[in-house]
Length: 137
Picture 1 (cartoon, rainbow, N blue to C red):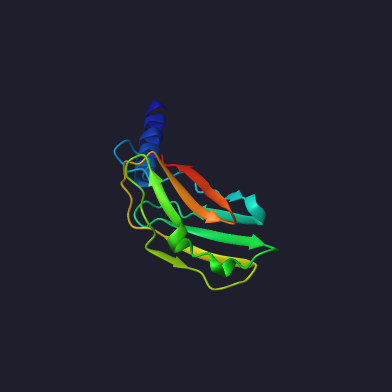
Picture 2: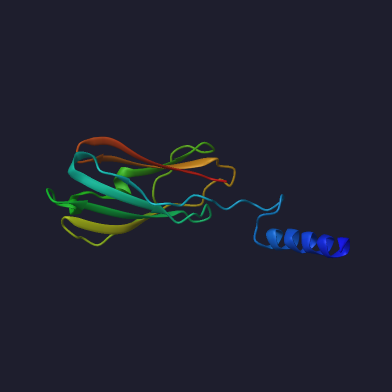
């Protein structure tokens, strides 16, 4: 019986290691949940793809009062971490949409030692900064 328990423990440890959960494995990320901010009459919903190698964010902008096509997040967004200075986006892929706009905001590779990432979107509808933060585990 003890042998079966020992085998089960070994197999479980091997399975965790193969999934990247072992002690020496490079952590990916744990928290990618959608976050939102609804200041200034414009709602922004942001979802991180969970990657440090090629981080990107699905961004949904929604309003009933202004034309969202005037906001170029490629110029208004930066990414902060506790391991690096601010990074500018490498791309903002979003078709025009008037009052409803959806796009993907992309950044270059991040330092694997980051404890958190924070997407900052500036100057949308008079709001100086909107901050969306995720812990990196």
